[in-house]
Amino acid sequence: MNRDLNERLFNYACNVLKMLGKLGTGRETDVLKYQLSRSATSVGANYEEAQAAITRAEFRMKILISLKEARESHYRLRLIEAMFPDNDDAKYLKNECVEIKLILGKIASSTKTN
Image 1 (cartoon, rainbow, N blue to C red):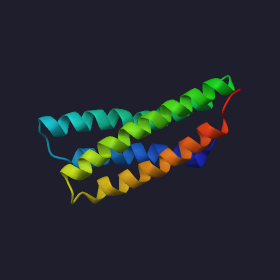
Image 2 (cartoon, rainbow, N blue to C red; image 1 turned 180 degrees about the horizontal axis):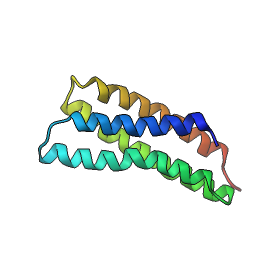
Image 3 (tube, helix red, strand yellow; image 1 turned 45 degrees about the horizontal axis):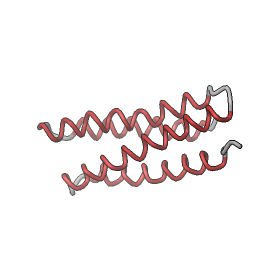
Image 4 (cartoon, one colour; image 1 turned 120 degrees about the horizontal axis):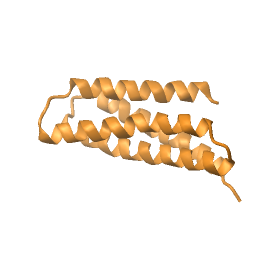
């Protein structure tokens, strides 16, 4: 298991939740907060599940799900950044999410099954 990536994904989820806690409330904001909280925490949860995979194919599938959730999170972070342009946390987290997507994509491509 890559402890550094595991810890990075955990910290990413915590930081997203902290940032969301600072946002105001309103119908649109509440929907985004709920959706982003689910997808951002799912990135690390699926990576954790990948560590317990029995087969290479199962490992790759969990990594791909984690990547999918990261892509979803990135989209929602872009929305928050557009809605709250002065939110430096959203900018930082969006960039962190881009790096996470690149890492997960590399892992997925290097574990292709035949």
